[in-house]
Structure formats: C-alpha cells, structure tokens
Length: 81
Image (cartoon, rainbow, N blue to C red; front, side, top):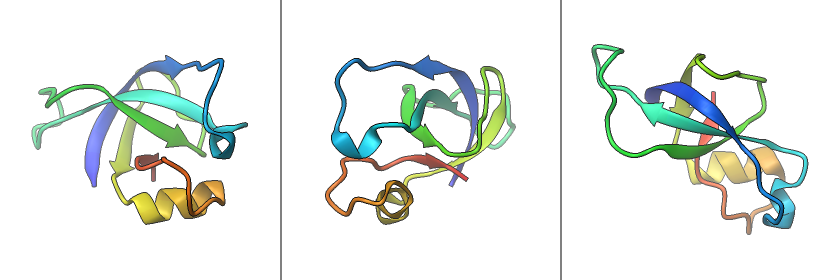
C-alpha cells in the first residue's frame, strides 16, 4: 500500500472491456513524509470517487483489483482503497 496524490483523471477512447465504466486516475506515490513524490505516475482504478488533489491510499494488489472489476483476466493492477 502507498499513500498517493491524485494528479488527474485519465480518459481512454479504447480500453480493455473489463475497465468499461470504471474511473481511471493518475496518482503520484508519496514518500513517508506525505509530501515528497516518489517515482512515475500510476494509473489506478477508482471505485470511491476521488478527485484531483485528493490524498488516497492505493494498492498494487492485482488480484484484489481484478476482483473489483469482476474479470480475472483483466490487466488492472492498481486500485484506490
């Protein structure tokens, strides 16, 4: 699990069928101090309605993310907790 800051919403004209209807966010992971950005932006599936600038907890639990979207063959890995 990581603490992250939502940088914006991702829009895709073509995406995997399992991602239809799901909101996609660009999130920057933060270091332990809660302010310093760590790494590259992460594409995250959001089921909770987080908006730009929100502080969120994200997880890379691919199995949990695939259960969330309801497709065991989905390429989804990251999700908002």
